[in-house]
Length: 272
Image (tube, rainbow, N blue to C red; front, side, top):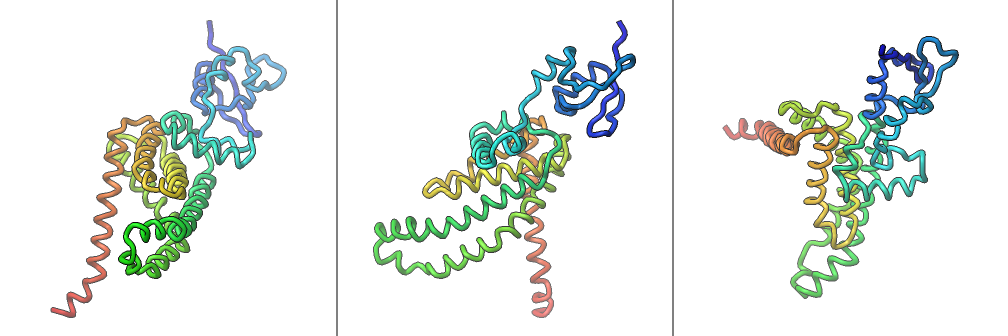
């Protein structure tokens, strides 16, 4: 039996001519949407894919895009934010396995930026309300010798510089991790997926960091979520992701050492 070919279109733009198997595969992998229009020879009108009985199984198999912010139009924004935190922290493998290959870069970045600003601002509050009184009750007068003013000033500067630090950090991290993945034969879904996963995980880690007494868990759990999320989203083995993160760390150290050397080079020439 001859395999029928379908002409596909979305928003008035042609998606080409595909066989039924290609359409079904595209639906499962979320390359095509159920609302995409289809037409084959002999039909009087275009029909949405969701209404075709031959693609009922493929439409039913489609994974729900996650994290929830990827489908924020289906729910209220506060609910989407809460679900995104839960999905990222408690089920990174399932969550990022369902991450669409294409999506907004701004939404996860702004989500990360907001939670980073909140975490840094709350850090000042927790330091004054909880950490300092607790330390003073344990160490007594000795802890009062700590330069609390300098500590608060540093934390304040860090909070003010959060937008710059987050922007620079995620751009550099996403680029170097994607390069590391490609060096080890991974990262085939592209830089955009890496960038989005880093922002979702960074936002979730900052959400934990904002909680008093639980902030210490943000870094180890965030590292696990990052490895699991990148591996699941790119369909890569975990060792490739771990090596890519090590590549980021080593490259960053080399860049910092190189920058420090260049900064002090004029002074060494003057001494000579």
